[in-house]
Length: 256
Length: 296
Image 1: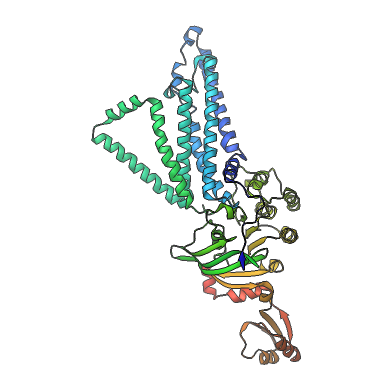
Image 2: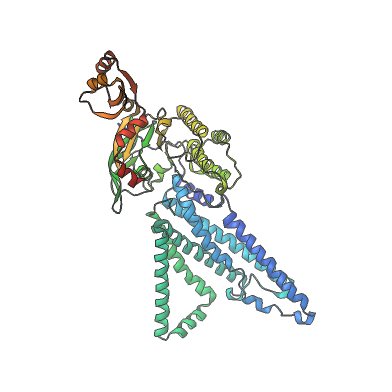
């Protein structure tokens, strides 16, 4: 008896195997692209309606600067949290599916990561375009601000940078949580959050007992939003690498 | 003969549970294998090990001459259709058939189309809203149309009606004749597939208890029917697998008979009938009621 070599006439190239997984995430883009933009659209419509109501109740002189405070709002922030949910959902459901199609964990993770990066680019572009429209129309004609929250700075490029990194942060933290879920199910995720919680409380305690809140505040102010966003890359990278190694030993189980 | 799968002393433990216990066998290229056994016997775990989805505790697996775990070269030759496959959020059957060809180099879109029509599968209905049987038919269609050199079907037809199951058997046989490949089919419906199988692996409680050519296996036991006294005389000290009787008549299943034994039986006025694969496996794997209740 001899053993055969793999018999496919046209085996996929290594890159193709990865991009196939990426395409898989976009095969039905309703959850990843459709729904978030629709929600954003609804929020925008609702916000504009409220602004218009405020506006129409005011005399023309009162209108000037009436919506100045809106730049402190954060009605587009849900996108970031939502992307974490997208990452968790995408990995926990497509992982067992893709493995049945003969995809390796490595190709799966790389392909999914590429999909997340592409999504981050798409959302950053979208938010940047909306912010540009907002600026060009003088805050939708009413001086309001929804897509240029003051926290992200006032240059379009800076905002895009912060948004892109924040999106990456939430995607890869989501991916890491999802791999914990895939490997150890609810128990694992619970333990994970307990550990994260303990670490956070420990950190807060450390800062409090050493009386160094002002140091933290000064550092954050010094860093600025751009600096803080850049530093988030450290956690993003750790999450991405951790997710990779966690998934490499994960097994798809049907039982939730 | 070339072998597609070689397994040596494979063991998989989950804590205290030994799901697969020191199993060794090989699967010959381009044959249809039946992987049979009761619920929880270890069939799914074994298939997950073979496709690199689970990690072995001990032993070696070789697919096309290489270890399958994280081996894209090997794994892209496989297709594993699971009993309760979940699909990505909001997928419609259409999306499954759009994406599957990216992963299966041998995918045949015409064949897929024909199967979709055979199974009357609605393409645009969200998968979440499909019936159990329709859900199973998606898996069956992917498994067949992918034409993967090594295809695993794990209880593929949960909820499929008899007509649909027979479409599956017919299409599998027909397509297998034109495009030979290795198929491993795990199922409870042993009698339905017994004509399909060329080789039978029976796993019970993690152990491989039968690894035989289907034809040989069918001849392994015979039921002898006739007058009780004549049957008893003929059976004598033979190993009895099963015994039944009504009044003066008796029906006894004994281990395989050779030609001269068959002649003797006929001469004694006894009737011989083959034992179905299902009965044979039930008799070979049946344990006492208590154990049955525990595993049920």
